[in-house]
Image 1: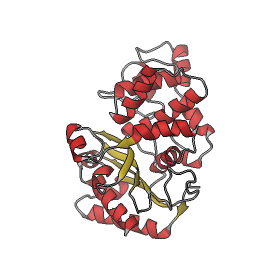
Image 2 (image 1 turned 135 degrees about the vertical axis):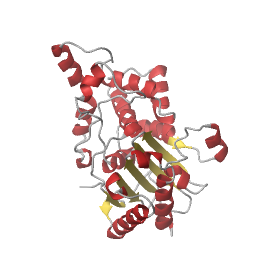
Image 3 (image 1 turned 45 degrees about the horizontal axis):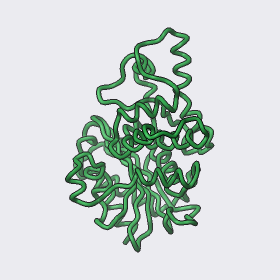
Image 4 (image 1 turned 90 degrees about the vertical axis):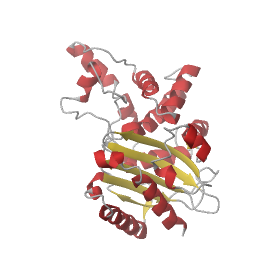
Length: 301
C-alpha cells in the first residue's frame, strides 16, 4: 500500500501527460518512464506535517537502475548507522556524506558504502572470503527490509557508483549479466524522501541534517557557477524562480532521474520523482523540466 492516498484525477493527469510527451517526438517513452507525484495540504517541514497526502504514479513500482539517486539511500543509512553507534561521527565521514549528495561525488559514495558495509574494493577474493564480503554488502538492504515499508519491496542498494565501472571483486559482485545492479522504484524513492522531509525517520536532528545537504539553489548565478548543479536539465529547471527545492538527481549514459520535494509560498507543497531510462532519455535535457513544469502548474492552478 502506498504512503499516499491514490487520487484518480491526479492519475489521469499523469497518464495524459505521459501520452502527450510520447507524442511530442519521444516514441516509447511510456515504457521508459516512471513517475511518482504527491501533493500535500501543508509543509512537511512544520511541527505537524500532514499524515496522508494525495498522489499518483506511472509505473511507480517498477524497479529501475537508479544511477546516483541511490546516494539518497546511502545518506539515510549513514545517519541511521550513526544514530545506532555503528559508525564514529567524524569530519571526514560528514564531508563524504555532503559531497555524495551536493556534488554527487562517486569517490565520496565509495567511502560511505565501505563504512556502511565494512568492506573495501580490490581484486577478486578466494570463494569463502568473497562470500563473506558479499554478505556484508547486503547490510543496507537488510536495514531497508527492516523498515517494513511495502514501497521498498524489490529495492537493491548494495553497489557503489562509478565513472568507468566496477573492477575486481566489485565487478564479480555485479553478476555476469549485471543482475545485481542497484534497483529502485520511484515509489520507494518518494517514500524515503517523504520520510526525510517530514522528519519521520531516524530522528528530527538527523532529518534536518539531510534536508540541509539536499537543498538546492535555483539562483541563476549559482547555477551558472556550477555546471553540474543537479537543477538544469532536471526537475528544478521547470520550477518557478521563487520555489524552494530539495533534491537528488541521477544521470548516466542510459538514465536521467531526479527526486525532488518542492515548496512555494502560497501553494501546496509537492514531491515528484521521475526516472527515465534509455540513451534518448539520458540526452533529453528538456524532459524532466517539462514534467515538473506541467505537474506543478496543474497542482497550483
